Length: 450
Ligand code: NDP
Ligand code: 2IT
Image (cartoon, rainbow, N blue to C red; front, top):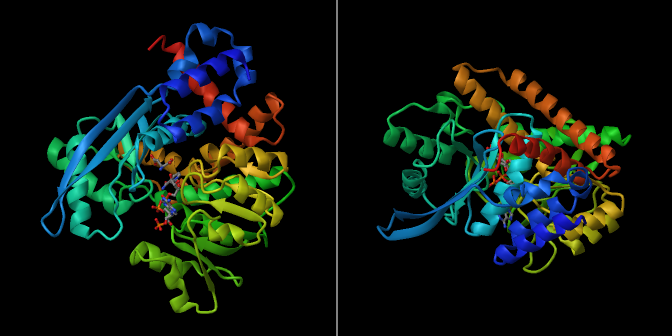
């Protein structure tokens, strides 16, 4: 690694010792930037990388709310505004008990590069709370969202920072958040949040965008390597928004999805997953994936065991699509996947593989579609939602879907070209980092030392 990069990495580690996920994300990016940094010795004088790894702003706040029993609860809310170099901060909100500053910072940091790759004018941010939506009533969810927005509204705006969904935050939560923002601000600022329902300013194809986009990227990556999706066996971790629409598009391309999961375990249906049933369980009933067996008793349910490889990754397949959460695939799991014949990975989730797992899979010649590029379809359609809100106009499903497809084609080309420019071959992980970085670095240089 270049000596400037090494120094920045060491300093970042010293300064952020309690933030393992953030350090993991920074290390993964910096490790791939050596050839670019060699070509730009002026970056060091401008402390460009030191500025790149320091968020412009971190907001952390108290979120008090009252549950159905009348008890007062207190959660912690965050918004990390990482980089506004190429547009308003943009990125999702995650509600999950594991949320902490390290996770918020890793997600916001990665969002900077992802958003740059979309080619659209959006900076990088992320937010959320350690609130656990599981088992909460609709009223409790609304109470929480209203309290969360009462503070967050001071820091966001359609030209400042535009949150959206992520784990635990979907159309229902965005609705409650939007309502409270509108009430406090007394303004109809449609573009302040994305992922809205159609009736009040949402974009068609936003729910599908991340999963569809992932499969458009996979299609391009496989095509460039003389492969395709037809008749390939796929395992998907997760059964939330990203997983469901990745499955839908994979099936449309003629692939056979045989397994999906949630945090408790996975279902294995060798005859192919019936997605309507998954949608009913997850999107309507907010239930557990095990309930799939109620309708299809011939399928198999495999429970996750603490400290062991998630059950879904023990199933043989051609392609694995991790669409749940970070660090789902560690080195041991990566070895198992390779042993089981998996030859391509599509990262629907953010940072679903550890750095060791990625290195191992690349060494073994596995095609890896990196998260920053492969799951950028969601935020790209969020940016299209912002455009539609500004125009006070809306595009048809087909129009949005076509734009998404083109964006994913361009993102793949950008990764491929950057990888080839710097002799990284089919290492699209490096390609995505370099392509995302180049635009942000140029914008940072143009705007001076800020
Ligand atoms: P959802 O909340 O809709 O679904 C999350 C899924 O992951 C659920 O099936 C959940 O199971 C499962 N899961 C398993 N283990 C965990 C865990 N430890 N923590 C959290 N979830 C877990 O979220 P999304 O589908 O929106 O997000 C999935 C991933 O995709 C995340 O990494 C997110 O950051 C990323 N992403 C999302 C985008 C979007 O537009 N929504 C865009 C780009 C990336 P269970 O129900 O048991 O918790
Ligand atoms: O990780 C992500 O890109 C998202 N959760 C979507 C962000 C957005 O602003 O649509």
